[in-house]
Length: 305
Image (cartoon, rainbow, N blue to C red; front, side):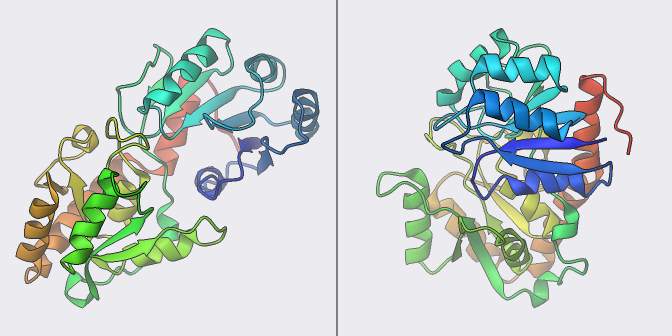
């Protein structure tokens, strides 16, 4: 099977293609669709020249995009195409997701942010971000040997009124967390995964970009595969997929997050047990193979090498 990912220039995108490529089902190519000089006609020609059996469109709600008519033409005349959306729970996406469906742009739209609160249709699918376990150390350190009690790896937020910024500043002021700002540069994702594997507790902030709701960040699965204990925003849809108090811990305020971190500081066995529980669930239920096979099943396609 020959697959093609239509992507933007953001650094987050290649890991999605890698999660399919590493299944060894066939060639996986990438084509950036948001280049300034790329017209719908040229994009169509480039895709037809590649001759894929399967196409994955990784969408952006802003910036240069192919027209809905062009996407439908590709889906109907070249190969089955699906849409991966990492922020479907965020309302700025909703009008575009509806128009994609009405215009027949894709065979299937897949929200990979774990929230069912988006305008999905009967054929659409809600899932969690596919993350390749091979990106993480094969031998995970016991928590008693991990050097950092609690860390946050990601973006710092949108400024003084951002919920993320407020939480991080509060915990940093109390020396409760280590901070690693995720880089937008390419070739830095593996180092990010390795960093998570040095943590006993991995702090997650589940708010969407507009902070109007919450969703399941890819960091939830990355934390699991790193064997760290997840400290998650209370009330997020993570609780639909995993068990609060058994697979991960929840906090409702900066103070509660601080109290949890402080309480567990002298209990590496407890954080390790919870990290291992979440890791088992992710490996058993949310592997890249399971993710892609569900999609192939939904669109009636056999994934043959």
